[in-house]
Image (cartoon, rainbow, N blue to C red; front, top):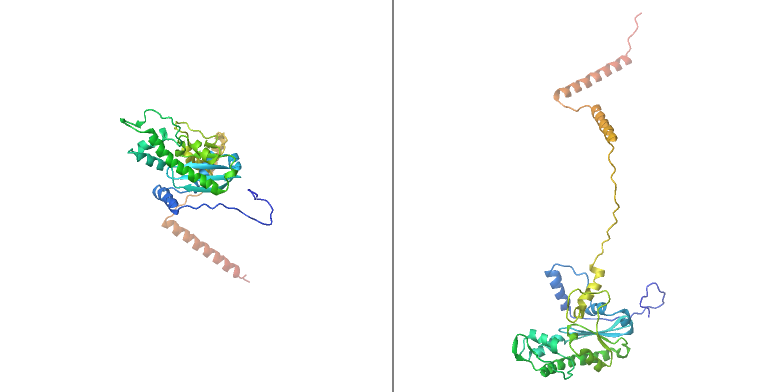
Length: 315
C-alpha cells in the first residue's frame, strides 16, 4: 500500500482507517476551560497518543513496530505503532492514582502515600527491605515495607494483566520488534519494566525524549512524565506558531539638499504669486463690473446697427 499516494496513478482507491472515539464531555470541558474562561481560541485537537509518539518515538521504532504505554494518574493508555501508522489504541481505567489510594488505605495521607509510592513502592518484591521507611515529619510512625509492596504489587499486576490482554487482542503481539516503551508519571515505579518484560516476553524500556529536546532545570525521573505536553508543543507548531519573516533593510543615504535649487524654486513661486491678481469683492466693484458689461453690450449693439444701416450719400 502507498502511504503517500499523491501523484500516483491507479484504477482503484482503497483506504484503511483507524477510528478513535471518546467521550464528548472531554471536548466540552476543554472548550469551557480555554475558550469560555480564558477567552483563547483553540487551533486544533491532538490525540494524547500522537503527542506521546511525537516526543518519544522515532521513525525506526514506529516502522518496526512498538507498544507505547502511558501510565497516567487516572488511566493507562496503550497505543501500538506498525509501519509508521497507529494500528491500535485503548485506554484502561486504572492508573497511578489507584496505587496511591491503595497505599493511603494504610491510614496514610494521600500526599504521603504518593511520596512512599515513588520512593519505596515496587512492582516486584525482591526481598531487599530498605531501612527507615516512615512518614515524613513523624519519626514514631513506621511503615511496614512488605505491606507497602503487597498493596503496590496487587494493583500494578492488575494493570499489567489488562495491558497484556490488550496487546494480544490487537493482533500485533508478534510484530513489535522495537518492544515496549513506557512513559507517564506512574511508569517511574521501581521494577515495572522487569514485570512487563516477564509477562509479555518482550523487551521493555522507559522512554527517552527525542534529540533536540533539553531541559535546563532539575526534574526527578526525567521529563517523560510530561511527554504529552512536550508532544503538544512539537505538533502544535503547525497550527499555533507563526515564524515572521523579517525583511532585510538596506541602509539608505540621504542626499543633502541643494541650496541653489531651493532658491530658484522659492523665486519661481514668488513670481507666480505676483502674477496672480489679488481677489477682492465688494458691492461697488460688483456694480462697476455690471456697468461695464451694460456699456459693452450697448456699444456692440450700436455697432451692429450701423453696419446694417450705413449712412446714405447726399447728391
